[in-house]
Length: 565
Image 1 (cartoon, rainbow, N blue to C red):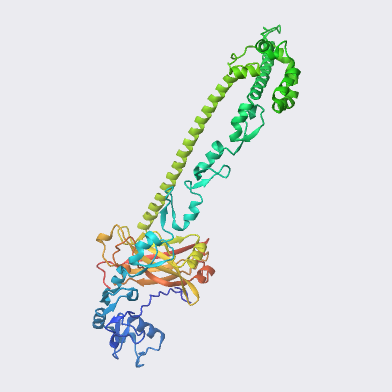
Image 2: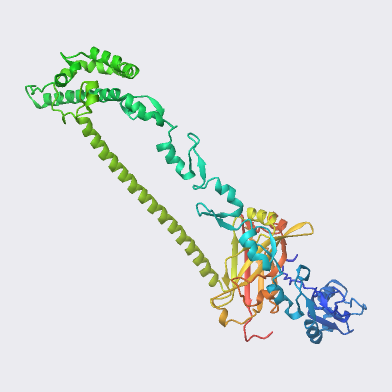
């Protein structure tokens, strides 16, 4: 922390006496006269009184250097550590802090913190961040059957989702049985699209011959009836379309023949009308176009009339050309159903079947190409996912490497701090951990943790450091011993930086510095009120949030095994 003159001031976390329920009750000779709790690191004065180390030093720094009990002059040099009293106090019996929750354990004071860490009655926050606090012994049951944020799987489609999203998932699950809105049929939700486009009898569809001029629409259930009743009409539509094609082909062939033949002569073939007259009693003596139109109207009513009136303008100019010769027919006429042939009185040329074969072949090739495109799209999607996974792995590995070679000086850059700060304030128990870092390549592994606390009607940013399981733990000295400096960096444009700095020394008796038995020690060491949030957000005394990024630096200096205190 910066002083008024710009000098750096380091503050150590103050610890008062032990606040436990002693069995039997604590003797008054072991009480600190300042905090009235059991003596922690007891110091004795020359006047015979005992105080907690932090209590008496803090008292002397704030008062006029006098004993708080008898008001006699007292200097720090008049204090000495009372190791005998400390040993006696640490051997006193205390109840587990969770006694009110059901734990009946009574242990020596020196072991109480170790017991608390493993106590099955210890209240813990749900790791799923559902905001529930449960006893350690009930945590497994809570995670498996009570937590609203536990991951479960759909019994129908086996897709994972959090328990509180079950109803939302059922609204989109492809295996849920639903009713078709058109026909009332029951099916899974995933089958609805194909049912609607291919099978539903109540869906309105266009006639199969719509592209040839039949504009009738009906429900799918009535399609077969329409196809049966309008067979002759559909055949005439095909015949009309075929005549147009051949007329165009004949005209084109004539023009090509005139270009190729200097004399303009070309061989003449029997006309289409002549061939059809020979096979159809309807067209005897070369039936004219107007007679043919009247036949359509008489035979097929509205169906035929629509074709005549819609296409009359285009067919009339070509009606005289139907008698012109054409080159060759591509194929002979197919044999239609005898009854239909008798009704219609003529046959449909085989070229239509030939065109259908070509169209079918093109359609099959199109389907094949679409299938290949779909396969390539799936491969590309899988490759993209794999690249994203590799990028994530590389990012994690790079973070681990950068943390390993930082030599104990690590800077944690927290992006998007403003929305994160709001989330930390609104969600009780919400914390954020940094990537891990090492004190050296073969040193201890730590990480930082931040959260927001509330005290005296003000929000504070709390910063803690946690020991983590590392690959070097087997040959390192435990518990960890050394000095830790935590600071929030001033990232403003000013050349004179006003960093917020706090220093602390490890305490071997704390669980936070014992060798981790899980990936990260649940107990951390640090400051619950490191800095007021208002000071950070308003940048009082410095610019601590630059481009919505907060930088926290940790400098961890382990004590060398052969170093002396």
